[in-house]
Amino acid sequence: MKHVLVVNYSQTGQLSDIAAQVVGPLREAGHRVHQETLVPATPYPFPWPVVDFVDAMPECVQCDAPPLQPLTVAADAEFDLIILCYQVWYLSPALPMTAFLHSDAGKSLIRTKPVVTLVACRNMWLSAQETMRQLIAEAGGKLCDHIAFTDRGHPLATFITTPRWVLTGKRDSFLGMPPAGVAPDEIRGAHRFGRALADALDSNAERSGQPMLRGLRAVTVNPRLAISERAGRRAFGVWSRLIRAFGQRGSWQRRPALLVFSLYLIVMVLTVVPTSLLLQWLLSPLLKSRLEGLRAQLEQPSGSEEFNLKKYDQSR
Image 1: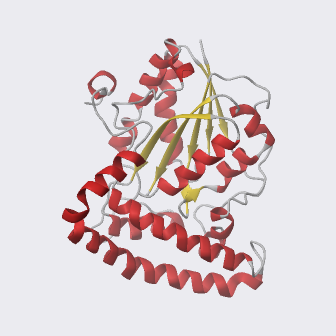
Image 2: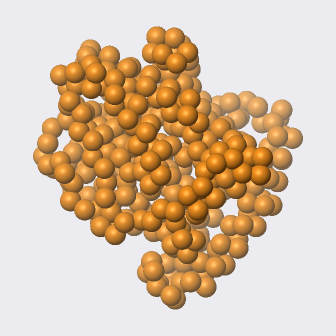
């Protein structure tokens, strides 16, 4: 029997549903699982009021996370595997997960341990995962696998459906566009990762430092979106530093800067993003080899191969 720590923060409940699909097979196999739900000292609302949603951007991008409530697990507890389940805010890990990885308790729990990261988001998680990789390394953890669940809707449609869900709590079909979030069949399919991890723990594969989830379509990267995401990340970096110069989160002094940023964000979504995607589509024959190389690099360590799906995916 192995001991597994699952650390989770989910506003909507979607990520918790996915984590439950992964955890189920681990428990069925006899492994002990402790699920730690992160609780910010000052809770984040859901749905988000617009001002609060925008005001979270600067600290999120700068990884300046507020404190959490004390964890329910002892900082010196020993685990064989750590699974970190996180959301993406402004192309960065959600602040509660950043707070956990910055905390003394979080660092103590993951030091020297194999770590699996699991994300559920709209479709852009690459920058957030790079930040996670860095924070895990700084804490002394060993990232072995990454699992990414995304909204399969068209990128332009999700620019409408996802903010609608975040700001109103409504995720149903809207104006002919599909419901927001990860599709139910994709969530059910997360069971395959729990089955594979259970087998890996049974054979002590977590001690090897090698990926345990290859061949299960753990991540699928669209390299065209990766290029747009990198541009967005740079822009958010500039805006976050500018807005923080006007005051702390919640202060009225930075409200004008937040308003200008909001207008910029709307213009970018309506003009720059579609133009960028169109140009990349037109130039794709010339960029094919470069994009394929970028895709292969960004899909590490777990990859998008499917050679183990028949063995572990019961929904097929």
